[in-house]
Length: 119
Image (cartoon, rainbow, N blue to C red; front, side, top):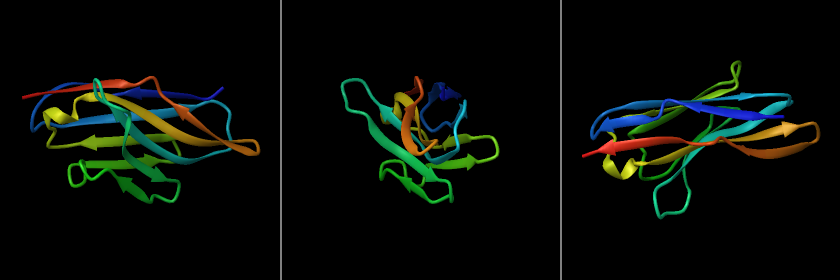
């Protein structure tokens, strides 16, 4: 069984910073892609950023220049450093991982961590 455990959410004032972490545990061969999605109240879940096993990154336009995704392959952990936070960044942030289990790749999601940015 594979689990993704997130940490680091909370309440911060606009302009502040937060760092999210997500660690994958369980039995698997490797992790292809790790990343973060978010869902604000009344909105659909959207991509925030992803990073491949080769460290290629992809960001939503709304967070480029403010957020940085990184990954520690030895720890099966992905991080999201969020700077210059805005009230519109308020959402539940979900960790995502595409994990190779035996012959197939499977998508896994964390339970989510709430980020609230006050104005």
